[in-house]
Length: 87
Image (cartoon, helix red, strand yellow):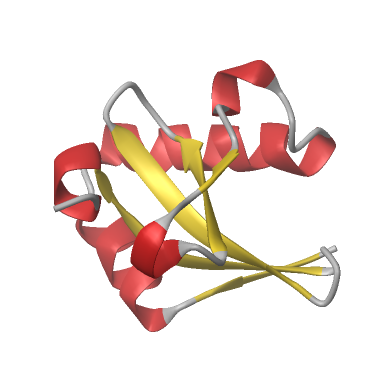
């Protein structure tokens, strides 16, 4: 599996508090081991982001990604708080 990041995602990760950066790294490790790990709350999105999925980074922070090439490529698009992402 290949992991890729949008420029926006990289910017948001750099701007995020250190605690969130560490939490993302930890959640990414879990994600790579098992995408269905319960703490990730991995789920499909609706509306404008219907082709995307979301995983929990912390109680309020989410990472939005797309599953490309039948799951061979994971493309992280956006990182932010629940209220920032779902306006």
